[in-house]
Amino acid sequence: PALVKDGSLRTLSTSARRSTVMQAWVIDKYGNNSVLRYTKNASFPIIHYPNEVIVKVNAAGLNPLDINMRGGYGAATLAMKRDPLSINKAGSEFPLILGRDVSGVIMECGLDVSYFKPGDEVSHKPKSLSHVDAASLPYVAATAWSALVNTGGLNKDNSAKKRVLILGGSGGVGTFAIQMLKSWGAHVTVTCSQNAEHLVRGLGADDVVDYTAGPVERKLHTLEKFDVILDNIGGETEHWALSLLKPWCGAKYVTLVTPFLRNTDQLGLADGMMQTAVTVATKALKHITKGVHYRWGFFAPSGPALDDVSEMVDAGKIRAVVEEQFSFAQVPKAFEKVEKGHARGKIVVTVT
Ligand code: NDP
Image (cartoon, rainbow, N blue to C red; front, side, top):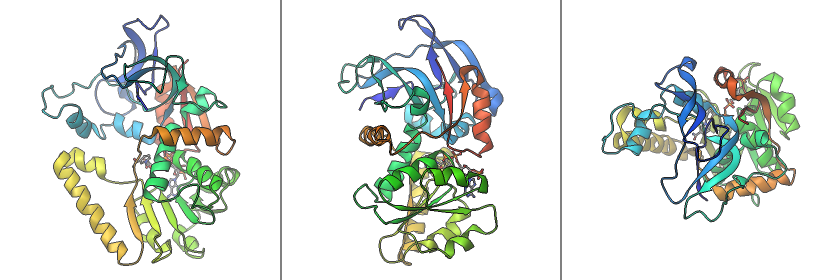
């Protein structure tokens, strides 16, 4: 599929598409929420490559990564990717528009784009969802899919009766992953705060363990062992989670919390990737001797995966879990809310 250019918290000015400016929230430097600045004069995007499209954004979902990137996370790595020969001056990315999850309408297509046409609701939006609900899905769906299917080895045909543990089930990735796994017939255990139990059970979770009521690993150890663990929390969890897997039968622990971008930001692309490879190989080796697999999971854009997700949504197997909507004027409030870190599903900004 074509790349969705402009996947961000931005909208067109009210005039037609030939306008050269649009309204947007931008940052001029990295920092805390005070760096967010509203402007009516952001440059209107142009198509640079024949596989790009321009999307008029109706609603945008927020993710923890957007908060991290506001603070500069990934900046050095992205600068190296954008400008490998360091031709541009430092800071040439500003004013920068943040954001990655959108639902909207295709305005313009590059010459090689055949899968989309102007007027399409992207990407391709589930027909049964509003733009607000649709904007809450792509990033978490593509992440859960990549982690559980590509890395964890699960799919619709082999998940029945598999025991899956999701550490951190109440946020964006967790609420999506529970529903995807349940629709494939897996048995799903979730850790979350006590006040999220009702939400995750409503999405289909079979067993729920409250991590705020004493050592969570002790309670998890009383349960039957797992085939796959999806870790949305990281840190401390790595010390005990792998012992919850069934040994010597291909069971996998997949964590989404990795030092990959931090390494490449600090050490440069080559050394950072080398450091990353050494870290992950060391950990994987340590655990393989105990008969379980240690893996890192990442967001991976995939049109076919999103099309499958759209079908599951339109078939009523997955629903959007939107905790709160904010208007375009309230973007800083939306960032604040995500930054607090107690998500119950997703936060979405309405743009039009
Ligand atoms: P959210 O902020 O939406 O959700 C995090 C959830 O975890 C909240 O509901 C929070 O609620 C809960 N939580 C916090 N601490 C614990 C704990 N110890 N045990 C159980 N639950 C806990 O995050 P996302 O779901 O969007 O993302 C999850 C993680 O994955 C983030 O760290 C994110 O950066 C990372 N990620 C990595 C990607 C990659 O490519 N590697 C891609 C996408 C996400 P409460 O505090 O109230 O319990």
